[in-house]
Length: 148
Image (cartoon, rainbow, N blue to C red; front, side):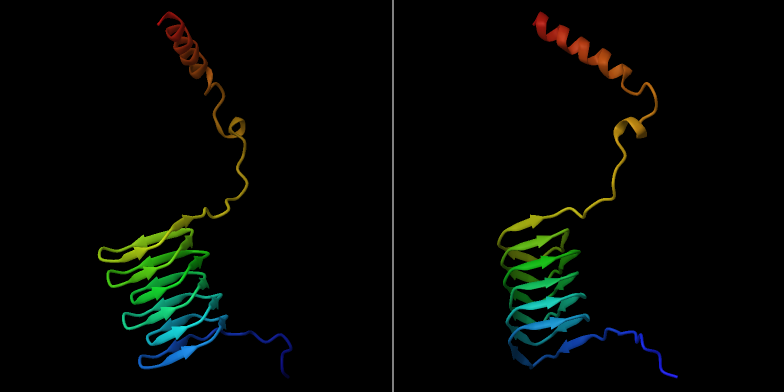
């Protein structure tokens, strides 16, 4: 009658305007902050910090959209979007960074590449004879260096 493997549906979590929360937050769901939060955040979903949101926290999440104020370091597995009203004071580690006109960053930024699938060696992907002209050009360059 009842199935054993129940599906967990992630619901969004809201910290509303006028609310102040302090502590460590860990969430499987998406998170929206319109109030004030102090403490670390680990979120497997996305985080949106609204225009009224003030966050004093180190954040780790999939994607982050910042329209309010954030004081702390950010690590995203996806992208960080800082809107025109967004202000970040802290260091960033992200795969993708979008800063709209008016957005502010005070801190360092480190971009990491998304791991790519295995690439075939150039010999397999280039058509036969693709490097013949390169060897001629390299010989010509070597001769011109010797002459000059």
